[in-house]
Amino acid sequence: NNRKTLEGKTVLITAGPTYEAIDPVRFIGNHSSGKMGFSLAEEAAKRGAKVILISGPSSQTINNKNVDLHKVTSAKEMLAKVFEFYDKTDIGIASAAVADYTPRDVAKEKIKKDDDNLTIELVKNPDILKTMGEKKTHQFLVGFALETQNEEENAKGKLAKKNLDMIVLNSLRDEGAGFKNDTNKIKIFTKTEKKEFDLKSKDDVAKDILDFVEAQILK
Ligand code: PMT
Image (cartoon, rainbow, N blue to C red):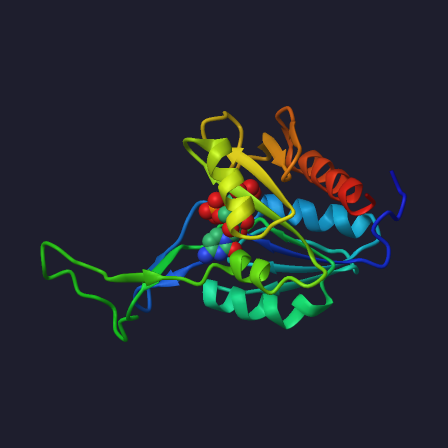
């Protein structure tokens, strides 16, 4: 499929984990590799979109002249970068696994291991996608939901709460789905529709997601 179905559209994609610093050598992170987001970026670019890919720390690479890769570390940096480009965005896809909490204070020096217990106080990070939903003017917004239980209920809750047009559910209960794997297994929800897909490569999952988006925006 070489049809430029997203020609003229700007697609903003968040990808990867965020790292929240504890001290100069340690951080709170998660298992996201960035693969899902980079596959989406590659596919959107193949379809002719201008892609803004905003990624947390990841070893994934991309080499496509239609993709502008912006690397960030923390959730706050990701939020700031997203809003540099949000006005020009037509389709926003949030595949990043953003840390929900961050240490209240970052220790200036490496924390010493003198005590048997160590308590790190965490404070809530901004919800990037929810903020995008609140500031939505013309953007078509796609969220992900990574769940381990009550999957559909939680996904639909996020669709409503974050003011999204579409949500992609992946469950850690499905083998081969979610973090790190080269494969994923998804269900897509809009306010009125539900579609379930088989386990496939993240490149093929990206095609399914973008086909679904295109069908929605052409309605
Ligand atoms: O990177 P990979 O290894 O390929 O793995 C892909 C993935 C499993 C990370 C991806 O498919 C995925 O599910 N990404 C979303 C992970 C997540 O954090 O889900 P959530 O259910 O906690 O968050 C819901 C949505 O809000 C997500 O779109 C998330 O990007 C967004 N969010 C969450 C919290 C926050 N502070 N800011 C956000 O923008």
